[in-house]
Amino acid sequence: MPRFVPTDEDRAIVKLLIANGYPQHLVCRYINNRRGSHISESTLKRAFAHELEVGKVELDTIVLTQFMAAIMRGERWAICKCRLRPIADSHSDASRTAFR
Image (tube, rainbow, N blue to C red; front, top):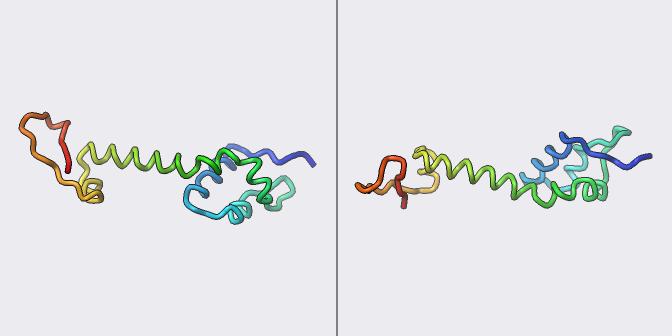
């Protein structure tokens, strides 16, 4: 039987599950091979090496980037989440609010 070749959807699912802390043996149970059975952990490690390595970092980067953008827009939920308070600065324009 030919080697397992993951689809783009398989890659996205593995990256998401790994980023959210699912153990590899459970991720294997979610991904099916051509015979309809689950892939092995060795197949997971071979076929999804990149996703296993960077999945968590990529998701954290996306979340933190969006979180920082919300803070910079002055969204209250984000500011409260960080316990930041706006600092009044008469020398800056409204788009450059500082926080502490």
